[in-house]
Image (cartoon, rainbow, N blue to C red; front, side, top):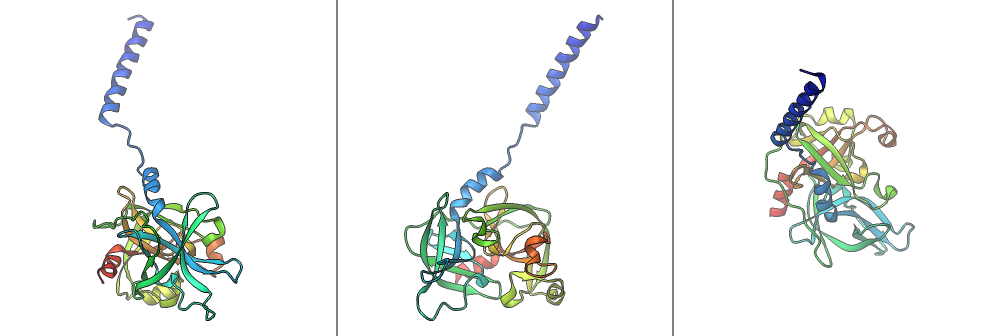
Length: 259
């Protein structure tokens, strides 16, 4: 068979093979970009506002919208123990609206569960888009995403998304007021544990506290970010992050909502 005929025959055969492969294994687009666009309107910054200080807004963590659109879930350690005695300080949430603009809503604490580091707030004004809570079983090795405001308002009030996997489901007890940060010593002390928590191979920062941990496929909440493993000092968690974070399973948030 002449060379050119052989080349044409091979080209035709290759085209057929590629067509069959394309039909058998269609390209699957990543669900993450679409999921981010759905979830971002439900992410808020939680903090306090006092017009007598500079800056007036002091960010403390991340929250996300639930239910009818006026309930915010976050960490208990994000909520201040008390506000200023002068009465000028208020608990608020800020809602990013693109660019440097943001809405601000007054918030009030309606439920708190310090043993699982969870809190529910109620906000004033029109309802916001809520996120659904997952009922599916979480497995080790599962791909997840979490959204929040790493390093607080330093990077601006723009929700930031990180990818991770569930690297372990391990029993642990929360160390009270320092729940947002764990050292190796504290982890060893707490391993006797009281409930299961999700260990992630993703880097979260203090500003991520209270943000949702999401199912990559559905965008539903499977947990709430609450702790970062710190190798050294608090400052080193920014310059030398460990890449190990923790999240509270959503089942405990469901229990708090049931109250």
